Amino acid sequence: MKTDIRRLGTSAQGIPVYSFRYIWGGPLFVGTMAQDLLAIRPEAVIETASGYYMVDYDKLDIAMISLPEDASPLTAEAAMALAKRAARIRSRGFVQPAM
Image (cartoon, rainbow, N blue to C red):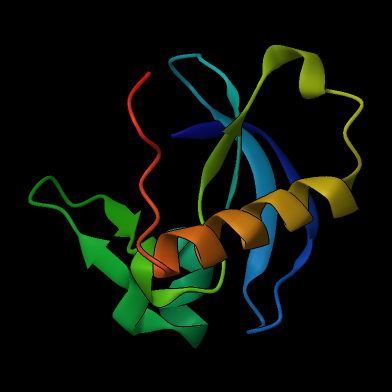
């Protein structure tokens, strides 16, 4: 389901963090792989009716984020920092007001 997969590092909870694109196209994402979590955090994995795995990011210390197209020079450390910050914002219940 994913392509252009690049390992960025590991979160404080030991979660492997990657950048990737979905095979159908679209932006670059930062997140983790459900297959990795099956071994270390199976409670954060959901199996869909079609047999695919999904990540329940509410149970992790990172959030899946999409990066703008011009973010290609972004370092692995910067991308991981954004995913961690997004998780902290999510855990505080922050909702961005509509513009």
